[in-house]
Amino acid sequence: MANKPKIKDLLDESACSHNKTKKAACNAPTPGATTGGCAFEGAQISLFPYADAAHLVHGPITCLGASWETRTTKTSYQGRDHTQMGFTTDISTKDVVFGGEEKLMASIDYIMDNYSPEAIFVYATCVTALIGDDIDAVCRHAASKYELPVVPVHAPGFVGSKNLGSRLGGEAALASLIGTREPESTTPFDINLIGEYNVTGDMWQYSHLLDELGIRVLSTLSGDGRVSAIRTAHRAKLNVIVCAKSLISLTRKMEEKYSIPQVSLSFYGKRATSAGLLAIAEALEDTDLIERTRQLIAREEAKLEAKLRPYRQIFKGKKAVLNTGGNKSWSIASALQDLGRR
Ligand code: SF4
Image (cartoon, protein in one colour):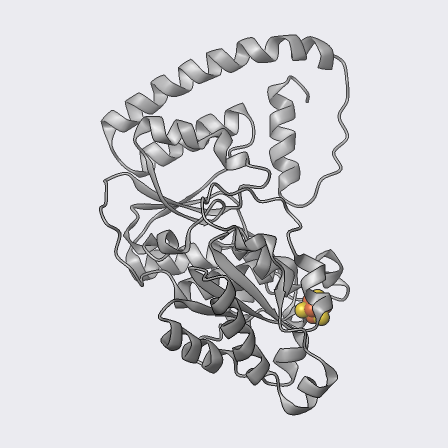
């Protein structure tokens, strides 16, 4: 059970700014909390964009239905996109009585025989966690049999919210993937994008700017991600947290373990994108990069301003009502302010 993260520690995350102002532990489960998605769903959201991996849900088929491909996360992976398949062990009453470990191993064998993924993520769910299936042992056995990462993800729905599940997804990556492979080469400007899921391809809206500046995305967790890349994430010079809250435990632990500093930012809207690019350049502490970034920002803002001008007229005098979830509200509000809304 060595891979099992301590839920209590994750609920009391020292790096979370909310934690300092709350009486109760951060993200402590509250009645009804899972109506916004259970921990298993959160874990799968944080890892599902790895299209080169198979995502095997060890539980009743309904758990798979609750979370499968809910976010339209895009990938440029040229091989078979395994996220188009919904893999589950489909636990039955008989398995609840006699245990589901054999069925889990048979499912892994089936996936390897038919799909040959780069890795397999095995998600515990309420039922298989309650009956006590030792998925760590099965994953260890499968990893050694097939010589590839088979990652246990301990985020059964009953432990708490979707946000906590995303943290647990990060814990699984840290325990089983990060630091298990060396990159072919490194650069002074290697970064990890953490909490960027490339929903509907939004990462591709700004990744070309990073490319132009010579800032290399060594790995992502997990938008348009590759398992082989996240295994090398320990060699990055900077962790860039794109989703402010859910993976902060991961980046704090990477800072402690691998001395990788972190910045938290957003790429929604003109001001956020400009500030984010500059924050990355400053955190990488290179004067030439900072100067080039300032020039790129000035050029891109001028281009964007010309494109936004007609819309400013359309939006003039209008009020905006946001019907969005979580932290995204602030991001969309920021983009609306760029259009002149207050
Ligand atoms: S893991 Fe538990 S809470 Fe989540 S979908 Fe499955 S049964 Fe429901």
